[in-house]
Image (cartoon, rainbow, N blue to C red):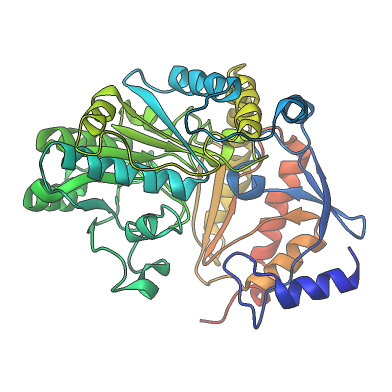
Length: 430
């Protein structure tokens, strides 16, 4: 990329969560392979983000590339209305086989946010078909479910963009976020606020929606599996649907194939995305039970009222199918276990650093929570100079590396975080 390219980018191209008038610096990546990103000037960065948690197999994987080449030679896209194709059938077979038995009806969508929208619309249409007017959702504070409107409405109202759209978004119910951390002792009073809200509003609640075990972009918090078990019990008690947003946690990231497995809980609907295609293309899915699907289908509309133009894109389905085939070979279990062990050894001792509030690790997720928010531009430049790609936010410096990362590459990432903590100039003044 030329200086003119970067100047055009800065002047005309909007990047995620970035000002157009005072944009953050962007680093020009011209190639990616394995766990490394190559910059235009030839430098290579060890990727600690898996491109926002999606590239679990690394970059330019020959099997994923071959799947895309083979599919594009046949067709890159065909509409899904009135048409089916082998790539979609193969992928949905795998998703049904990998998820708990009751989840057998698959809706393919474009992105994680859309999968959440789909799940919420399914819940609303389910109750409409049953002749009940249930239009509210119960969720958790500190949660995050995406940037589209319905998804935003169930994101934490104080710690997200939610407040910017007050008056436009529906008002839903927010229980206090879980206080018992993963691995700590369980205290049953932790569920009291959730239980009280469901007791008071249960007849108006279409579904509970939450991120199982790991609250991601809302705070990178790991909570006790017993909380999720109690949520399931209370949903059953009050006849409320449970939606598990596994977009960030699905496909092995927490050390289990799906985070719900930590609690041995089966939701009524599950949303998956991000790692579904191994980080190659955008694709997501919402799975639900036969009972939910049949109820919706037998309602007044006679069908589920949603249908994206690029639904079940064959190219995305083909590469997702290969990505899941790679996961089913079960190497991810050893890979994630090795990452977890190394992250614990490298990051947990940093809890004693004066700049640190907490250090926590679960599966292939490592988090350092600091007292002061990071200066994103400054800390990003520091990490790039050290040859690593880490994208912190707020007071959180975290790692979600590709599963194939080597011990040496992971050491480079954790060493860079440790070094950053010793530089106050990388953090905002309080």
